[in-house]
Each structure stands twice: as C-alpha cells, then as structure tokens.
Length: 96
Image 1 (cartoon, one colour):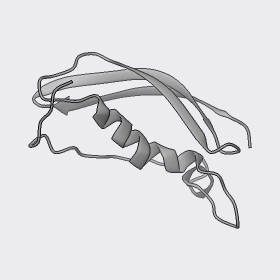
Image 2 (image 1 turned 30 degrees about the horizontal axis):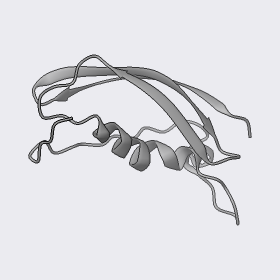
Image 3 (image 1 turned 180 degrees about the vertical axis):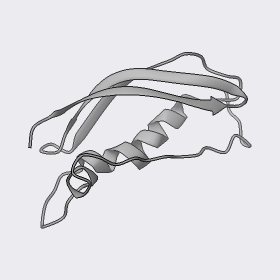
Image 4 (image 1 turned 90 degrees about the horizontal axis):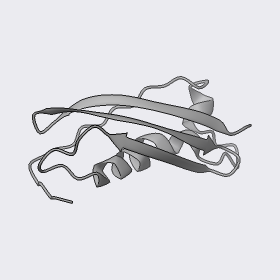
C-alpha cells in the first residue's frame, strides 16, 4: 500500500465559537505513521490545542495502523471511506 496524502478541513462549535481547522498530512500503512499540520482559525478561551492530538490518537491513527498477523486497519476495513466523530467536554478547562 502506498502513502496517502491528506487534506483536512473541519469546523466545530467550541465553547460557543465556531472554529475551523485546515491542514494537510501524510499517512503510511506500511510504516504505521501519520503526520499532520493543522492551522486553527482561532483558539477560544478554555480550549487547548492538545485536544487535536487526542482526536488524532483516537480517531485518525487506526486508519494507518500497520497490518500484521492477519489484522486489518480502518482504511482496509472501510475501503478508504469512513467517518469518525469525537466530542470533548469543556467542563474541565485549561489554557495554553
């Protein structure tokens, strides 16, 4: 399998403010790696950009997991098309 170029465009309401994130990246099933660069439209009070790393770890990384011993990753299971959604609870707020 070859490396996959990624184009990232997303928007969500965060602490009462619409925030967009745009970026690009590259994923490799052969190496089991994912690298992305994100640019946020704004950083609302009480929001930590480290939430983006949690989304990546929980949502995106299984897409490019190395396949071994008969196991398959999300990219193979879904034939390259699946949707993932995460919700972050802003009740414990931290600032960066």
